[in-house]
Length: 516
Image 1 (tube, rainbow, N blue to C red):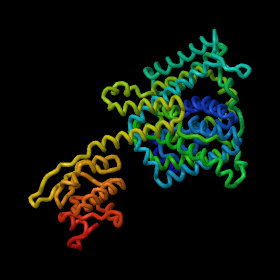
Image 2 (image 1 turned 30 degrees about the horizontal axis):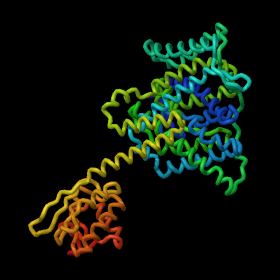
Image 3 (image 1 turned 180 degrees about the horizontal axis):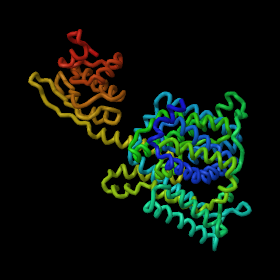
Image 4 (image 1 turned 45 degrees about the vertical axis):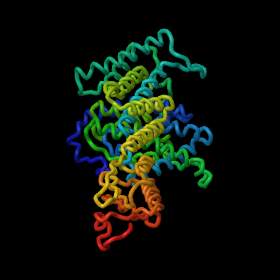
C-alpha cells in the first residue's frame, strides 16, 4: 500500500535534491505557525508540532495530491478553541478523531467532487482574503509580550526587525534570477540566521514564541467518557472542523492542480485528511488540514512529489527530538520575510486586471468572500456564503430566461413553445405566460427547448393543467426530454398529464394512447 501511495517507481523522474530542499524550507516556515496556533488555542506548543509532523507524514503517504502540504492549520484549530476552553484538551482530541471519521466517510462516498461547484470568483476571494490573513499574521510578529502585556516593538529592536525582514524579502526576490538550484526561501533563512548569529544581533527568535524540543508522540486514547453525552458535546465541533478542513484542503488541491497542470484525487485526499486527523487524536496532535501558504512555498521551491512533504514532516520530528536548540535561534524576521512573500504570491493580482470585465455579481461575490475571510478568519464560512450567493444569482438569471412563443395550429389548438429551464426560480414567470380564460379547447405545451428540472416545475405543471381542466379544456405536452418524462412518471397520482400524439410512442411504445 505504501509503495502504491508513494509510487516509488517514479523516483527516477523526481529531482530529489529539489524535493529535499523544498521539504526543509517548508519545515522552517511551518514551525512558528504551528507553535502560534497551538498557543492561541491554549494548548501545549508540542501539540502544534506533533500535528505538523503527523498531518504531514500521513497525508504525504496517503494523500491524493503530490506536492500538497498539510499540518496543524489555524482554520481548524480556531473551530476547536471553545471546546478546549470549556471541556479540556481530551475532548478536543475526541472531536479531532470524530472529524477525521467524517472526512473519511466523505472520501469513501466520493463526495469530494462537489468542490468543483465552487465558482472562480469565490476562489479569487478565498485566495485574496487568505493572502491578507497571512500578511497580517506576519505583522503581528512585530509585537513583543512583557509581563503578559503585548506591545509593538520600538527603537532599535523595531529597526533591526524591519531591516532583517527587508533583507529576507530582497534575497527571495534576487536569488531566483541567479540560480534556482536551491529554494530562495531556504537561502534567505540561512543567510539571515548566519548574519544574526555571526554578529550576535539582538532580535526576536523562534525561542521567543516557545520551545520546540520534546520527545516522540506517544499513543493514548482520549480520556473522555464513551457515552451519548460526550457525543452531544463533540459532534457539532467535529462536523464543523471536518467541513472547514475539507474545504481548505480541497481548495488547496484545486490550486495545485492549476499551478502544475496535473490532476489530484479529491476523494483520496479526503480519506487521507481523515486518517491523519484520527492519528493526531491518538498521538497528541491538535489536528489540521492542508496549509495553503506552506503548499505555495513547497510548489514555488519546485517540489512536485510526495517526497518534499515527507521530508518536511520528518524534519519537524528531527527538530522536536534533536534540532530544537538550533531551530530556536532562527530569527523570526527571516520567517516573517518568507511568509510575506508567500502572501504576495498568493494574492490573485489578476483579479484586478479583469475586474472591469467581470459581471458585477461576480465582483460582489469575490469581495464578500475576501471580506468574510479577513474579518472572521473562517475560510469555510466565506466559501459557503460565496457558493450560495453565486448559486442564487445563477438561479435568478436563468429564471428570467424562460419565455413562451404562442401560435394557433390549423386544427384550432393553441401551441405554447417554452424556452428556458422550468425550475423553482422560473415557475411564476412560466404560469404568467398562459391565458387560461381566452385559450381554445386544446392547449399544447412544447418542451423541445426546455426541460422540467425539479418538484417546483412539476407543481407548476399541475397548477396550469388544473386551471385548464377546471374550464373543461385539454392540455397536451409535447417533446418532453427523457429525464422529464421519467420525472412526470414518478409523480403519477400527483400529476396526470396527457402526452401529445408525437410523444406517445416515445413514452409508452406498447400503448396507443395513455396518460403518464
